[in-house]
Image (tube, rainbow, N blue to C red; front, top):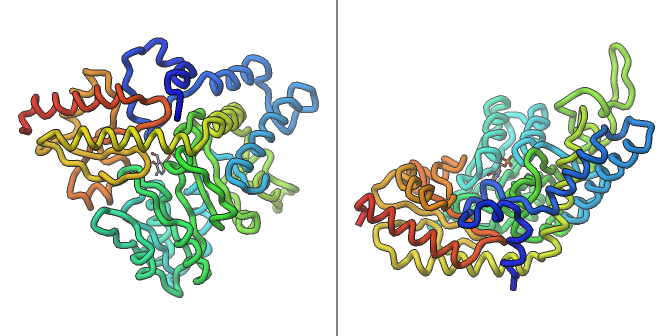
Length: 401
Ligand code: PLP
């Protein structure tokens, strides 16, 4: 069981906001002092560039930056050279899709789903428009889940790319990604996994999954903003052209010719996100030391407690009662979520209102927007109580019941 009281002491925001009820971790997590400290250490004690400096401070910064890559590789059970640092999940997924622009034809098919965050489906929509490759959607089941059976129906000999979310940021469901990867590989397709919401909640082993590409962001798992990861199988990364050109990514440069370094460096042109990588590594150590079993148990307990209490509230609609990863998506009946959100804000309850950059699933739910509360390691049952009281207040205030 998590010692939440102790965990909350790691998060300085609670010192200045004692009555804060932060339920928007799916958008971005709070940051612990352990992460803030290493970022501060980099800026106050080093602050210099990596790779190119021929002096002690630069060697030290380079060591920290590259050992962060080792930490990420260990976190995912990947190899060092398979870890590319990016700005975040969006940048990682766009990097893969961009490099497939010249690898696809109208004979090819791409499979995605209505559960995707825009950053998982829009890059492939773009590829499909540019190359005429056919974009196909897995039909969701009645709960809104991706199933292996539905996936089989859209998989074909023409499938070249499968781009799916591991955990939906609206529904909180876990996709049966391992089975899907195995099936896709039988057809020679590659699978790009959006793990932005999975990485904060579950152990990811890319080798066991046999994923071709997988992306996540630092800021959703206690790390800094502006840093993320693209994992890619080494041979696939080295088949991809860089999409950014500049310092530190080339092997040789002549006036009319240039060659690129191998991955990961061919994708890290320019001064990299040094403090971000160092902070991300510390964040991964932080959540790993808490342990995914304990995180899952805690989040699930809060989720089930919230659902149990919300079920007694008349005038609301919950869309994902069976979610596995601490996401509650709901609406106050006939009240626009942005109106309802004002009540939560007044009570210092931070939740999300909108389409959560996932319009296809919001439309699938026959909504224009929803409210979303998400739970993580620093949340308590008291947070849930304040949240549910705010839901009741919103229902009363807007006369939904
Ligand atoms: N994919 C999912 C499932 C997400 O929830 C998010 C962010 O909310 C993203 C991708 C994009 O992440 P980022 O904004 O960090 O690039």
